[in-house]
Image (cartoon, rainbow, N blue to C red; front, side, top):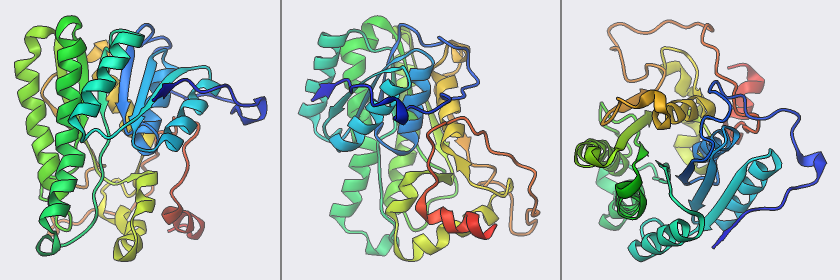
Length: 308
């Protein structure tokens, strides 16, 4: 399904739009597809791209989330269409890409943001659970890359930014996601090499701990752990969605025209250092407050009230 949402009443329209650092109109006349665009980081990316003039297509499995995000973008003066389908379904991917290209025109960029996982020790992960997470975070992204290349990028060029994660030191407690994310980073390099002759650049971002709605999907011990994560980050805070979005927008932009095949860490230095040389507590790092519709995850709200 695809649609553009109606403009909500004036009372729902925020007083200020997305505060992007990039030039207004940077993506005017360009169409960019954001998977997982109904919530979290994908929602922020879709908003920023639309604020910069892009015709945005967002997709995901939840029509309700997609419709709400598209309505926000339209209310802010942007253009957004949405399509609800499962990126793990090969036939659905092929059909939806074909419909968008036929009905709306050339797609110039892809943000492969959709994914998901669950915490579990490796010994407790079933074959079904492992394969489901790999399909969410690797196979589905491959299908979107392949189809948009075949149906648009091969003839017209384009830019792809894939979503990975901070897997450099393994991912204890999420072995399935770590394997998939590492695979996506490698897939990024292969695609960058094979598709360069078609004018296609392929890069990836590897966010660390980002204060996003995905944090509210965790329960149990993980929920208790989340407010303490910033103590393990040299910048002594979690990242915000706008900081990931800015990196993605840069990699999609003409300014990154000679950058391809890289995975950019966005983790506040969390993957660096050693317990032998602990980082120092401070309050010197200030988040980039760019996303005007950002919402603090519930799991972090008490943390903010307590000043922890």
